[in-house]
Length: 205
Image: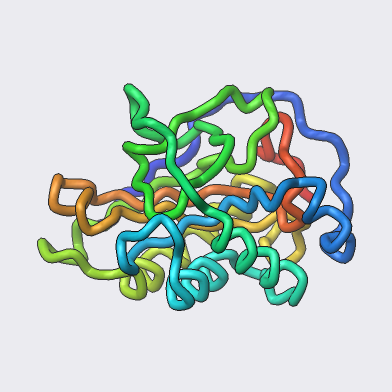
């Protein structure tokens, strides 16, 4: 039986009301294109290829808005570096300033959720049952999508397709998989790319 790890019971001040996704065009520049999407696979370069961008868009459930998709592509082209690996890997209950492309949880530093951030991890999904060999992005997406979708509603308080927020997933990379990484992290983020302040837990928006 698959055992899921839900977000620790931390209660932080809810963030202020968010603007709807229809305002995304004007927010792209203001947010510096800090869209927090994670994708695995690809060439290993710091700049994602088209397939990696498509996978990132697919992960961002509900982001069919053309402006958002264009922002994803522009973000992908702008990625140029990664932070130093933190002492502790990103985990359920943590927030991250940015989710860097092709970086597993062990390489992502966390920050206090009361500070401005782009991502809040709300669920960990085990991947052990996918077998010993690295499964690839598509299989990991199929394995995690239902749990991340249900977990989002449990965490935020409304279904993702009714929310001004969305979710994406940090997957193991082929390298981290070889080192024993078998966990995908579902994280909540904003559709409009505005920085978040405070937890999204129970905000119901």
